[in-house]
Length: 126
Image (spheres, one colour):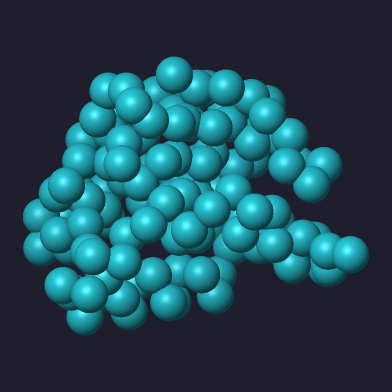
C-alpha cells in the first residue's frame, strides 16, 4: 500500500511492507504513477523488493532504477540491506555511488532519508 506522507517538508510516497513484492518494471511504473504530480520521491521498504533486485546480475535493479530516473522521480530504498551488500561487492559499489547522487538512495531508516532530503535541499537538521 502506498501512502503520501511528508518528510522534512517534502512530499514522499511511502511503500511500506508487508505487501506485494516489487518485482518488475511495471511495478516501478505503478509506484511512479502513484507519485506523479504529488511527490518527487518514492520510499520503498527494502523488504518489498524482490530478492532479484539485490542480485545485480539479474538486471532487475537496473530496470527498476532506470524507470525512476526516466520519470525524474527519486527512489529511496529504506531498510537494512547489509546482508545483501556483504554478499556483493558490486551492490556495495552501487549503493555507495547512488547515495552520492540525487536519483536513487539506499538508506537504513526514514530518519536517514530525512537527512538525505535536507542535504539535497542544502539544509541541515538542527
